[in-house]
Image (cartoon, rainbow, N blue to C red; front, top):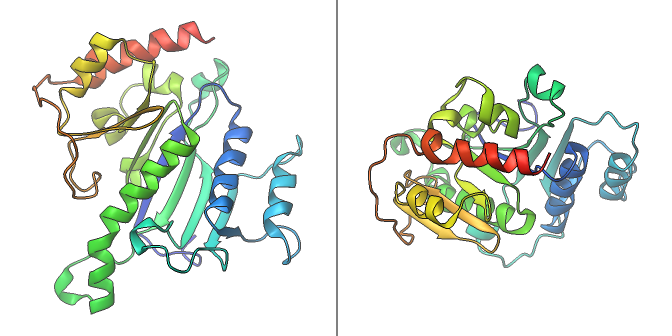
Length: 256
């Protein structure tokens, strides 16, 4: 991976309960192609995107990773903060053996480089400008992912903070990462009742309603360091354990 893009990384993890993992993988790849990106290492150089999509439709395919770069299809006058990251890796997320045994499937991880992070004082002018734009670009990219692809839930952050387990592991596994402490930062409509929805969102400072779900966080970096409509910010301790986990358990039982 280091030869393709430098660490550290931002990772966005998206999970769909109603789609097989290979279909979810293909949807993410198709989305990136629509955003003007080209995949590497698949098929003829003249049409690698078509070659990758054809390979993903093959039931015997064992593809677990796809790399993308920006291409000439990218609109030249698009604002920098509206462009997708220049280099992206799509792969599968974490899943436990217990989740596999209970017929769950993996989430999809989307990784891009944040190599310009570091003390502004030692950066070049160009690096410093990119570092200042990075939170806004990351937020816009993540919001567009959730808007266009409508996962059940999603999360993103710096490396391990972006880890997004499958639904079974979110509900039943012991906490193994910061994700379990912070929870996701996007949730599809319909998982929470109206009362649960109001209670859950009241614990977050940044709340943004999207067409099929809601983005929420207490981290201004994940919010693109910009002002979003604020929730009432009532302290509730552990909204993940008190509200979201029981709701996801109920959702899973209803959709088995």
